[in-house]
Amino acid sequence: MTSLEERARRVRERVLKMGTNPHGVHVGGSLSLAEILTVLYGEVLRVSPEQPDRPDRDWFVLSKGHASAALYAVLAEHGFLDPAELDTYAQAGSRLAGHPLRKLPGVEFPTGSLGHGLSLGLGVALAARRTGGTSRAFVVLGDGELQEGSVWEAAMSAGHEGLDNLVAIVDRNRLQITGGTEQCVSLEPLPDRWRSFGWAVAEVDGHDIDALRATFAAVPATPGRPTVVIANTVKGKGVRLFEDQKKSHAVQLTPRLHQRALASLNAGRTT
Amino acid sequence: MGVSAGLAATGLRPYAHTLSGFAAARACEQLKVDIAGNNLPVRVVVTHGGLSSGHYGPTHHAVDDLAILRTMPNLTIVVPADAAETEQAVLATADLPGPVLIRLGRAATPLVHDTVPEFVPGRAAQLRDGDDVTIVATGPHPVLMALRAHDELATLGISARVLNMHTIKPLDTAALLRAARETAGIVTVEDHLVVGGLGAAVCEVVTQDAPVRVRRIGVPDRFIDRVGDERDLLVAAGVSTERIVAQGLALAEAQRNDRALAERHHASRAGSSSRG
Image (cartoon, rainbow over all chains, first blue to last red; front, top):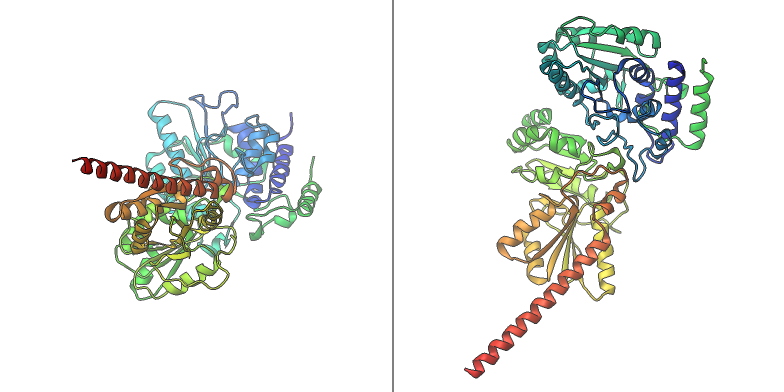
């Protein structure tokens, strides 16, 4: 059994490889998600590639759809996709678009137009409660995405409904395409804002696998309330030249840049 | 959009930018009610029009934007064909009293014009003369395709007029009615759905005042969930030089058939009257 650390490293390696296509990849926000997605798919989500549509599954929504490369890498890690297909990323005729398409196994909704995902998760969670189902909805949001007003409409509604089968995870890497989130439109005090909308808040180091594991194992953090996990992350995590850099939002990796990025990734290898 | 309307209401002339799909669909109501509804001088400059966001997928495609925007009174809608025309369009619309939307693509596209083009809002630019058929195109790839189709049709003995319909609203109805009266028919070409865009607008004009055959080339009425860059996706959707040529030929052929029929009809009438 491959360790979750090694899987997260492999997710990063595959994201970098996908970035070598002529259109590049949203590398920064994909790398920041490696541990979050690895832990969710490895230990938390009740999903299976053999029965992707079983009614009692958990639903995963990547609301920050531009990080599709990280999702594809994790889906490949877990048998939803053939890893060889990752080489087709963003190229003509591929199923792997820059933002996920619905027809891909394991993808519940096409996303990429920001601000839609939390409402989708809210709908799924409401349906499970209405029908007495055990499904849960996990929605990964970008922190820049929280500037979309629709996120807060869904947050208000979920808090009102007290949906404790809904979990939002904020990839709090503090950067968006145009710069720092606090410089663009500040989000802080972020935990207080979620709390005031009726949510239970858990803060965690989004690159600490054990901490993520413990946090997700404990949802709902408060019975009768939706949970938001604010995962403090580093944009471009794992590759020194991309870390905490605004310019790592979207990058086309030339062969030379790809080699440098891989070397940097593997220099930090712990296993 | 709402903020721009607020700025403009105080006398400023804001330029607002977002992706075309987001302006037309997400902020549709703010654009309609707050900007167009108040006839405020907001300039909305959108990128990623049509299929120009290619591999990003359908969340970022904007092939319905013109259909939505065309329904908004007061709004001037401009789709420049290249960088030179974009510059002229920005200058020429800067002092218009009402709202303006300029729709751009994403990646660089080849220049259509060798020299600085004249740009008059609301007046189609006739890029090629011709009196057999008319090609009406809007946007960078469609205009480039139309020019290539013109050359190919010329080698086949068909003289095609090419209109760059850079202003979708207000539409140059005079140029369209001349084309309808002077040529065998109109082929429209756009990086947009065949529903509600340039082709539909042309049909609305000619069916009323100068009925003529119109062949609409655009994106079919379905979501594009195929990955590819803009040109790949356009060609796969049926927007190509080859199709413009084929439709141009078909229109010329249809007119020849019409004339032959009319002549036979005329001859038989002449024959019957001589017998009577």
